[in-house]
Image (tube, rainbow, N blue to C red; front, side, top):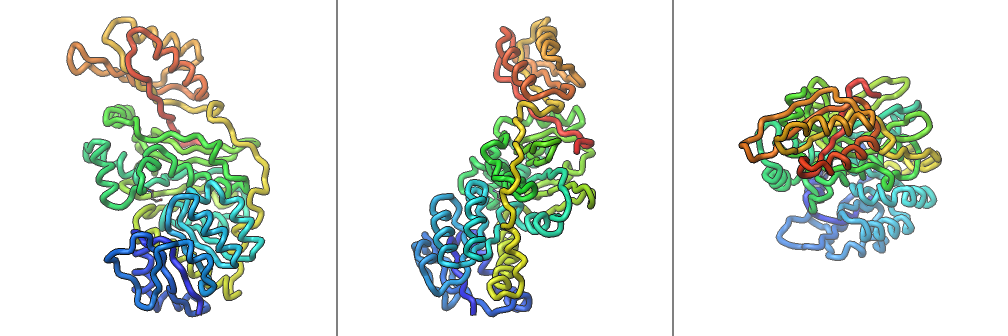
Length: 432
Ligand code: HSE
């Protein structure tokens, strides 16, 4: 009988226990050994229901030292405490499952190596895109050829907020409150809206696909906090919608890795990924293009991914299926550089607020011309009243981000331009 310990009993922990109890017969038919949830660490023991015969403890650090426990499921969040629990547990030869994307993005390379040295299972399917089996898919099904690119909507909260703003005319703040109430957002939603959560996820995927060290520190990160309803409306007038995406791709001899909002054409398949849904498009040089779509957040979806790892962990622990160990094989073995975002070229959306004075547009275009930026599309709106600023919105030709940044600095210095100039990259459907 294998004994499972769960660290953390919030939304995902409770969904996990409920899933295990409700689908016990089904899960047992997929595993090679009987198992039980022996111990749960819950820092806020309250009136929650715990499974019968399970020891409930307050201190999650009790679990790595518990010699009865064979498999630890870490669902705490944060980095330092989970790092301690996981590394201690691995040294004590316990198999590990975690949903902790921040931890994997920051310390994955070291933890994979430690798991390998101690011959324990290490599963982290739930760390990226909730119920979508992207990690298993790229580590197993897609591991036998070259991956050209991976693009995904991987933060459900951002997608939900942008979708609510576009389709229900909801304000950013109301959409964020609603995402929190529905349990999609992180305990601290700053990481969702500032792009860090998506950056953790794309860094994990990037390191798995290209066998590189976690590129988190070199990942370009932009959130959705400065996107206004006006941007969504202007983008729509120009034929685009706004999505927050993670992108990882190999171009020539370097890797591009970013988590940022983009304008995508309304015909692009990603524009139909609404609400909290996640979607990932992977391009391989043999299988072509595959797209995975599903629930990227929420207790039940995340717990479902944890259970798929639990089944693998049990079968690994009993020696029935040792293939999962290969997840950590060759990690970080490639030494490929990460491209600086300044050097990446693309069309850009720019939003400028200026006083309604003749000649402003001419001054702006002169600056753009000096940076060799041409305007592919432009829309200029009437001011709300005679004292308001006029929004000027344009799409540029394909230029480097450095040129865009340089021209923005100069435009912001113009006497009649007020407020910061805001830019978002445009992702064309025909890009790789
Ligand atoms: N806060 C995350 C999201 C949860 O919105 O995608 C899943 O990682």
